[in-house]
Length: 196
Image (cartoon, rainbow, N blue to C red; front, side):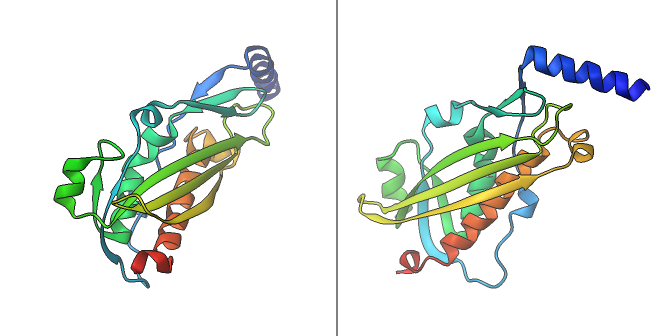
């Protein structure tokens, strides 16, 4: 009986407030490891994420009529850097799209500009945490002089049931980011245009 009352209160609160709950979707970077069956690409690369993207806050649906908000670029940049480090010989963070100092010092073969696109949903009516998350990751790759090379895009998915989410509200988001990064790792390693 007590649990039914609690569920009723939670549902009413969620439907009335329809508020946005903060999440942090940083994946477990210990799971971003080198692909054992594929040789890394022997190239130096730089990647660029603008300050606007790092500050970007996204709001997507949760459960019970609520929403969630998070910072996809800021939350996942460390893991993105680690992923690139498993693919290429050396990775440099660029301060601008045309970072002359880094381009000169790093002898960079490629410049990578990532784009993240996320969404969430929930099968739960009582709890606000999203049970399902999607994370699209695109890597637009060009030469240091700006000539387009390739654009690898993947879709990550993350699911967590209510019991798991009660221990970690962000779990489905973390799993989707991790899935996207590991898929992106494979896509980049297997792209023949990057090995020329």
